[in-house]
Length: 324
Ligand code: PMV
Image 1 (cartoon, rainbow, N blue to C red):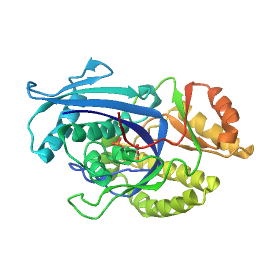
Image 2 (spheres, helix red, strand yellow; image 1 turned 60 degrees about the horizontal axis):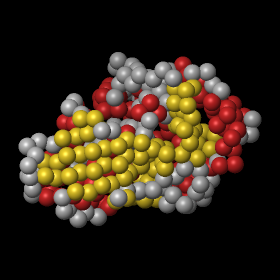
Image 3 (cartoon, rainbow, N blue to C red; image 1 turned 90 degrees about the vertical axis):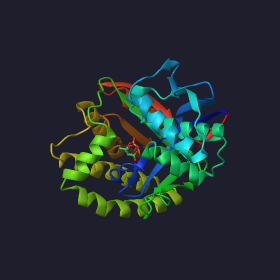
Image 4 (cartoon, rainbow, N blue to C red; image 1 turned 180 degrees about the horizontal axis):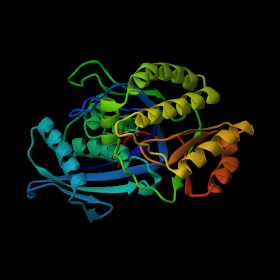
């Protein structure tokens, strides 16, 4: 009744931005990510007869807030699937600098889903695991796999065809992602609230829905062809469009800070100087920069020099779920 799993986080190159069904998390558009080796979560789940409730420890500290309710809510689904009523002690170690602005929920829920289903004796294949993980956190369903991963939105309202599919393995293409950590970061609008407000109120959201399927098809070809310029420019443009929808929301908002924009401008300047580098940004102020291994020292140095940048953490393509 005990299992340990490790999952890595991922960065979306084509964003998931909006739900068509909130309770079971069905997205409004298919999307695509790269799993990263630099950020991971290791989770042990131990179901025990003598427990009268779940106990969730994050980095060795007992958690008793909304985060633990999300974990318990997710384990309720696992218990229902297995037809068992036992509670669990959960130990999660996050190797994701929280300040890096990476959704630790992606590696967190992927590791939780893998460890808890194994511990309770469910034998799920990767597709079934992805479907279950999706209901904990949308972007987490992509972290079941390594490398380049598409989350296919599906058509059914029960969510049975909304899951991640591997597009190219981590060894297909050695590209790099630098997570640029800003000194002052305060996430004010959660991804959940940001999505909801945008879907409900932004007149730009229709444009997002119209363009994103095209971006997705084009980037899949570019990844297949290992066309870095094309992959990077599609990812950057898709990120800009996602963030543009927030400016049209009511009330309007943006995840960007002054340093966010300085980093963006520096990346664009690097391109003008002949270094192929592209950025993408999730639901927070930090920037992730894509580049090729040969440009590593130049890109890293340049990013570290920008005023307001605290740290630059480099990742390679990472692997999917593993059991320890
Ligand atoms: O899965 P969530 O709720 O953490 O939402 C992720 C949303 C974005 O990071 C902005 C985009 C994405 O596809 O990861």
